[in-house]
Structures are given as structure tokens and as C-alpha cells.
Image (tube, rainbow, N blue to C red; front, side, top):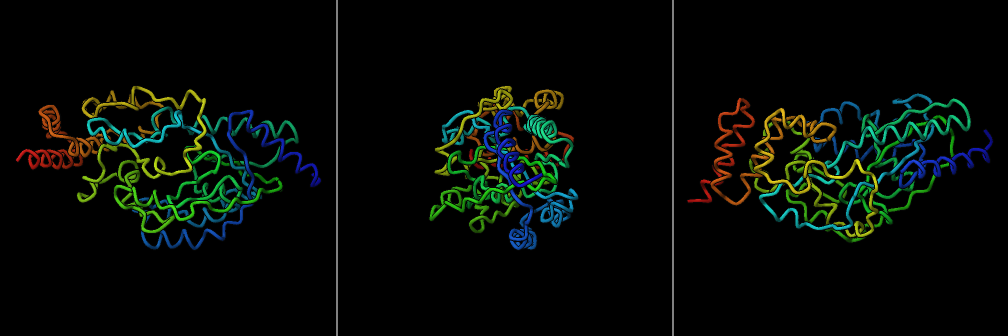
Length: 353
């Protein structure tokens, strides 16, 4: 293809992406060398915690062509998921309610976005014939935020999230690696300035420096990635957050520009945007599997679900109902659940002394 034809194709791809429901489509080259030192330092400090796959596939993250041979470009897409423009911490100040990260309240985004990416690839094939590509939706060793930053979609903020000047950070990212030498988009540069709101608000002080997150202290890691005991010293700081944490996004000034999603799949299911801790703690395993079907929540499993809820109940104001619910789980077959239940009961004994 001539350069003129490639430029026209790039514009067509962006237009087709918007037609398919993506909020933005940008294109990056695959030279990730600038991100290597930061990634290696993060790994050397063991900030990845138990996420061994981060260490195991580090080199693939820095070399997209090694992951998918003949890759020349990354077509980056953004899909907004916020259903309200309200960025309020009020939900976190209702301690008997469960806080679930906004992205996880509806259906799992992976399948929806992957299907859209496939349709985008099909449109390209219809226009130019067969071409090399592979779609990624948080499903392989891909530095998606770095690629999106390179493509001009935004910048990686001090909270490590990708931030867009016109849309904030409430969005999903995905990529289409391709062997097409498409023209690339220019980076935007960073615009956090002197603002440290995200660093200051973090409940567990997980940010050791701007753009450096110690996952071992991050509530999202503790409630989703960690499969063992949550460090005792961090439990009181978790409040009512049972799956993920959004504090550093809620407080970000750029999220006043949040773009609202029209995707029905992202709407909260089963009242997960206003659920009582006790109600969720009462679910048996069959209910958990049924009510989290098609949800990102299911991946943590029932055992960690109860573990997280036990911590939240330990942080809730003491009541007879909470103590009774916790006592009802003291004989749970999982040692992990029992440990966190005993901790929670200890909190209530101390509160009632």
C-alpha cells in the first residue's frame, strides 16, 4: 500500500471504530524501550506482589513483535464505562454497604470488547483483504496503558491510570496488533501538574512515588489478585471495599470530564451498586456462582469473596446482626475465611469493651 492509502486506511479505521461503539481509536508504534527501566525497577522492588506473571512475561511486554511476530503497529481503542458523571466518595461513607469497583458492577467487559475488535478487524479485511492482526483485551502480556500513551490517547497519571483530557479515566483499553505500517499518532504529554490528590487520598498509602504503585498495599490487589491472607495492618484501612478500589480515580480532577457510556452491559446487576454487606455475606456458593455469572467478580472465587466481606464487616459499626452473621461463618471449611472472620469478631469485641 502507498503512504497515501495507509493514511486513508488509518482514518477509516478510526471512523469504523467509532461506529462500533469505541469512544476513541489511536495508533502507536511498538518501540517500548522507554518503558523498560520503569517496569524493571517496579519488578526489582517486588511491587508486583504475588503477580508472578508480571515478572515471568516482562520481556514480552516490552517487545510486542516477540509476542506476535511481524507486528508493526498497535491500534488502541477506548471504551467508556461510567454510567454517571458523579464522582463522589459518599458510597465509601456508608459502612454497612459494600463498595464494588465501578468497572465490575455490570457484565464482564472482555467478551464485549473482543467482539467489537473482531468486527473492526473484519471491516479492515473487507476493505484491503487479509492482513495480520491479533486482538488483546487485558488478556496477554501487553503494556496497554503505555501503548495508549504512545498513541496519544492520554497520559499515565500519578495514579498509574491512563488519563484523557476530554474523558478522564473511567474507560477500558484494548488493542489490535497489526502488521500494517499505519501512520502513528503523536503523544499528548502529561497534564497532572502539581496535583497529588490521588496519592494523598489512597487509603493504604500504596503510592510510593508519583506513577509508582506498590501493589502489595493496593486494595484492588488485596481484594482481587491476592489469594492468601490480607495483611492484618491493612485490613482496617480497607473500609467497605470488597472488590477493587476507585478512590484515586474518584478524586482525580480530570474525571469531571467523564464521558458516559450507553452500553447496557455495563449497567449494575443484582443491585451491586447498593448492596448490603450482610446480604452479600449470606450468599452460599451456588448463589455466588449464579449471581456473578458473566461478571469480573467471579474470578476471585467464593472463598476470597467471603474473606473480603469478613474484613468489611469487621470495619462496619458493630451490631447484633453483624456479629451473628460472622459467628455463623466461624466453622466455615476454609481456614482463610475462618481467619478473617475471627479477626472481624475481634474488632467487634474490642469496639464493645
